Length: 124
Image (cartoon, rainbow, N blue to C red; front, side, top):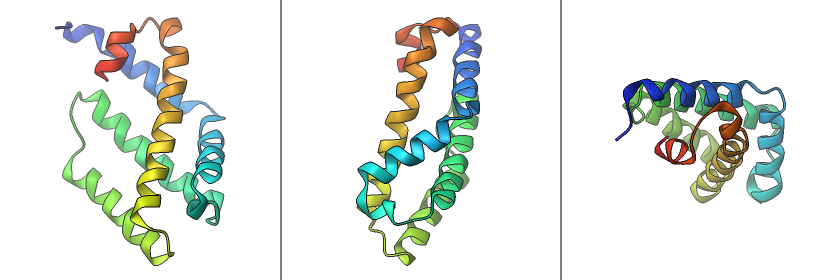
């Protein structure tokens, strides 16, 4: 078990990753390339939803908790919005997973330099 005081570097790392100027455009481009149904949507629309999901995930991570019901309802609303746009739930989930992998990949790249051990990052 890890001490409570070794969590702040993880939170700092995630905030650093989320704050990178090129992260969102890179994630949006990756999602649009890998999920065909999402490619037709405007980049700004994808970026806005990705930004909101990142903010919710960062809050949950900082508090060392899972997402709240309100945070999960945002995902449900996103799915409804996408369904109205003709995008299947499978594509929505695929886009979320592609974005998640890209973000965690960036976090893994920066973890050692931020003093976050691999097993600690895995805990996150």
